[in-house]
Amino acid sequence: MTTQIERIDVTPRMSKIVRHENIVYLCGQTAKGAAAGDVVHQTHEVLSRVDTLLAKAGSDRSRILTAMIFLRNIRDFAAMNEVWESWVPAGAAPARTTVQAHLASEELLVEVTITATIS
Image (cartoon, rainbow, N blue to C red; front, side, top):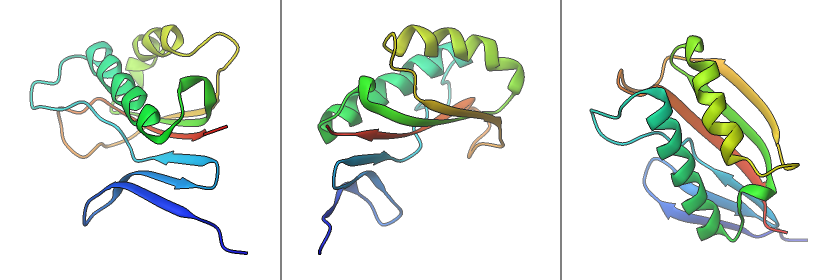
């Protein structure tokens, strides 16, 4: 039996979206630009980017299975959570992990990686 893997928005380094059967994997999403703003601003931007990629893959935030959230500073946990909790549909909270991490550049305060289902 052959399983189908579809890669969307592929670069030499990564795919922004990978679909395998009815599962969607998004690469880590971060805010753009050197003046990306505080963690609240960045979280809003990141979750907006997640919405766009999920739609492109044929999914949406109500179908998220897992989320991995990386914070540059764990003291931003409460502020990030305020944005997150207003974004996640009621009754559709995914399994989630949040950790403090050194992100790819100093201005990045939050990165989110998502796994969702299509159906």
